[in-house]
Image (cartoon, rainbow, N blue to C red):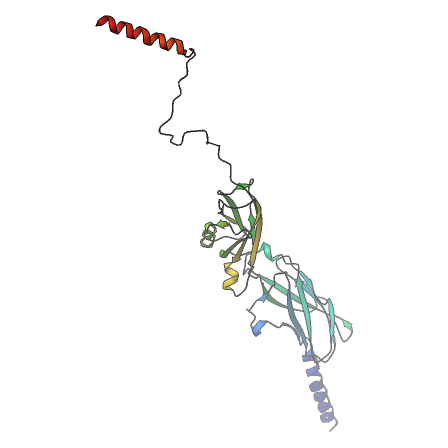
Length: 309
């Protein structure tokens, strides 16, 4: 009878001890992925930041203490908890803030893997000996598409005269991280008698790779009646890629053109009205004959005529 009682007590103790022992190591680390899809990346914004939620699930009866390590791609910086204590039978969620990623230096849609590691430090207040326990979780960070442009309008080399024109060189630079082109061009000025051509329309036909530039010429013409004035010319372009993505990215620049009165033509009032029938003036240095000389000549001619008769 006593032996049966001892065996029963032993089985009872074994049954009660087995679940406790089985709970050791029953903790894990996880990440709250976008859309609950581990293949879905976390988007990095234009400021090089992203936020990641992760959790530690402790199914043990004892409290555990873990230390975290972070590995961030694209030379990013991690700001998350260094260590945390998770109560037995609980689930704790934490926030990892990623910053310092220079998104301008990476191609759009580039992906890099990040890793979070949780190392078990203690269980129920007792240190964990080597080799210890650890859990690891990873995900992806994605570089955004950045549409950005810079515009430059070259200043004229000098003033222009009314009735003439000037050519201005316009340069567009793609400062984003994805291929783009000019979507729209707008030219404005504050001089009603100044007109500009459509020479910049060619910009809308050219693809511009990230970091590259393209140029076009804008011709401004002042009418002959244009007064002396400083005319401000403003050029604005928009990003075609941003427009197609539902956004709006504009770049603008301006320059000033000085219009002077037309050049004065030389005074031709002393010339003949008909240049094809010039009047030649022949001068002589001999003295003009007097009245007496004229009468003498007439008398001699009369005498000669009578003798012939």
